[in-house]
Length: 235
Image (cartoon, rainbow, N blue to C red; front, side, top):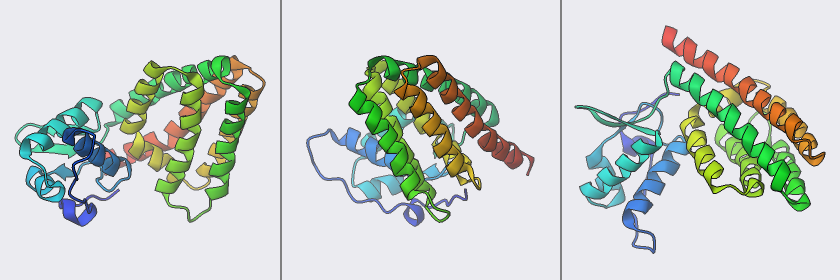
């Protein structure tokens, strides 16, 4: 993905109003969503002055938000250069995918153990929705949002705050890699087939098989994303 040095050229932010949530939380949430939606792209600098002008907040609030996003791993603070949107290295990406495969397999296992029949039905419906929006021209952002619906139900049924927090952190850090994988020709239809296989195992309450299929799904997704990163490093 190409990047631009100017925030105003890529992200049109509205000054934040005073609502119930603390201002720092509003700024953090706004920047996080802009990163996850690729309005702010990997490698792009987050210039304090531009953020202050765009969001209408203080330098202190911007710095607090950047510190929080850096702790989440989606922003990197480079000495003498400032903050940039994190672009994962090949080694980091490899490790993140392995962690994600193990973590999501555990989430699936907990879902099988704890989810209601109604939640199992909603999990299947989330795959139906993904299929309904998947065409050759569907924007990647829309596909990611539709696939995220699968994870919303999965986390709800797994009923684990700890797993939810860990999974959300990992998902945010691999967002650009997820987009790369889904951009591969034919991959969205493969994803739908893989998710249907997971749902079928879940419906049978076969935790072992569902977990195994989940790990396979993540590792297949990693093949395209990691190949893309290797190609970029060779340029």
